[in-house]
Image (tube, rainbow, N blue to C red):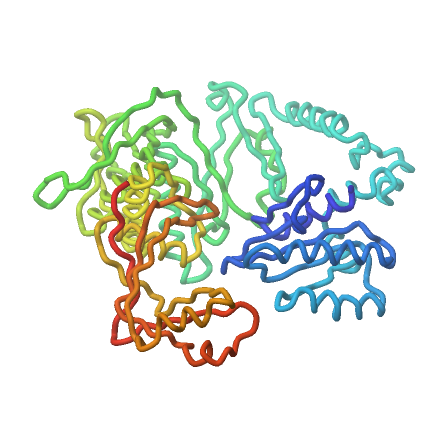
Length: 539
């Protein structure tokens, strides 16, 4: 079990979005699976077999494969185990397993592949090997158990406490806080008390520049954004491509803390100014026309504020959570400094409720057509800006608004809430639009041009007799409809499809009795007609 859990952890690391199943209650032949972008499923079968397979183990693998194939849209099946196949096993896998799975592709990932993947992942090695790992043995021989955390979390806590105590002794004024995130070490420097920067001031001068001409405009924009954060507060990270260097002016003792740090290549500079407590404020994000009329509005909530040297930045979001704003508020009007502009970030809307997203999308669409944006809290105007070209030119903005309108239509029809989906197959979005249009009263022509129905083999002659002398006919199909969207099914109630003019395309084949297995009647449209979804009545 430990090996299988480690393999599952490895696969989750390699394939974000992978889902694993607990097999004690039956996993349907799927230890883990990944839904690809095209909607097909890649199934992973994980075994801990580390030696050549016996007949019983082969039968278990075959049984798991057959169970996996009972699921829809299987595109690939992968066997993962800590054993490289023998020539005999390779023949069994390439012939019998591949034949069972056809047309699904199959793959064997064995010991060599796992060794390569585990090599850079010390956490997985330790999980599998435990205290017998070679690294741990060498460390124990040199009385360095804590250097590799032989005791687990207690050793980690002890080391962190000791390092924290040492870092706290570096300066009486500044708290040094090292941290490692995603393999990168960062060092945060904070005053131990609010008034200590006055006692031991540190001046940081960030020099901006870009070696590449293509980056110079971006470097200028980064400098403007950095200066606004310094003035009004906020958070910002500057990439090394836009940095020429950093100068630090401080007391001799504090300057010595940095050592030769600044002589090394700089990866990035991050600035975070202090936050201030603030009670939630409710306001409006409004689109204003050239005639100074409000063309659209959305409710926003501000619940965070950060301090800069000239004022604060108020952070707000709309009710859906899909739009966030940073609104600079100066402490006092200063003619010597230009007014800072409000910053607006759009998306992602995945998981947001369509009803609330609809309002803010209406504001963005109006702003994209040239209206100004303003933020108002009560009768006080706090921010005014034009929508940036990056947001205004988003090609998906109109499509998103149409999707939201379709979701609201289906919500109202089914009485169920439907969050805005993220990665959703195109066919599901097309089905959603078709159904929403039909609910709104349209007769919608479908993209399909044919229909197929299974027939009872003993009633084919009766079926053909009904069609005798009627090479072309129309049909109406009534059924209980449903919408499948992101693994959820929404019942629609009675729906009807209308095919005004169809031809039984395989009439001769059925008449001659030429079919294998279940006979199927195949209809195709004719005379320029199509297949239509009729308006769906309100339940």
